[in-house]
Length: 142
Image (tube, rainbow, N blue to C red):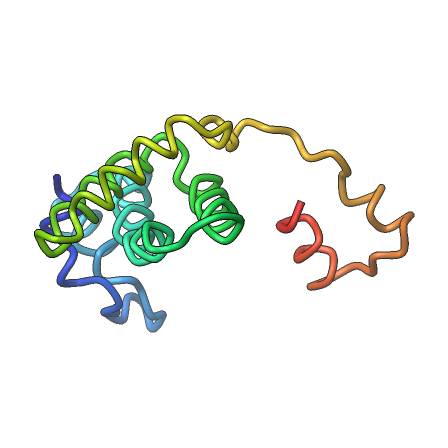
């Protein structure tokens, strides 16, 4: 996949119109001249590899939460990220990645990106959560 090929660029930036840009996004958009949506998708996949790699190593509630947070952003692309994590893992760690993918498929997390929140921002504010970063944090935790 293109994301796997561009993994070495993860974390690098360049200046575009005096603003720092992610090098992965720039390689896809500017160099390969693909659509913004494609550049965003590849960048999202490359950025999520460490998070999924950490989730693979976790167990229990910590694994569930870390995986859920990653899947909300990745949507169906989580499978591509897991494949890259598997490819980059040491041979002795690859079975753990396979077990992780099988585990994710058995959890209700697949499709979590389509879930509607139980409480919207207005409801949270009525419960006393102030506007701003605290509201964002509360909504993400939900």
